Image 1: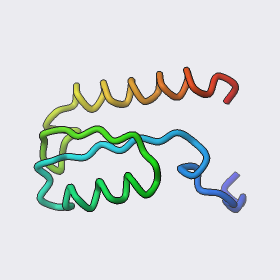
Image 2: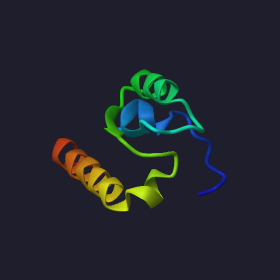
Image 3: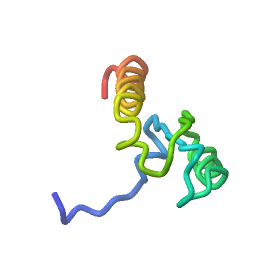
Image 4: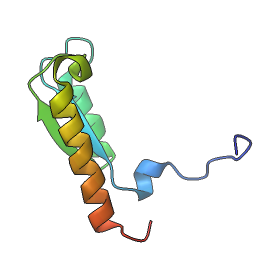
Length: 78
């Protein structure tokens, strides 16, 4: 398994989401938004800091749940 070489990045062929913390002072939110747009991600903004998973864990979990449900509904055979 670990000897396999990747030929295509998953974000190019699979649905992907990006969570942007609008109060992030480590990574510029504008840069995060640009990268999310480049990979065609569904973008969700949260009024939180860089450590959004610690500051707003319930909101992060809800976003992950929404992304997973969306992926299941749009790609039932994968």
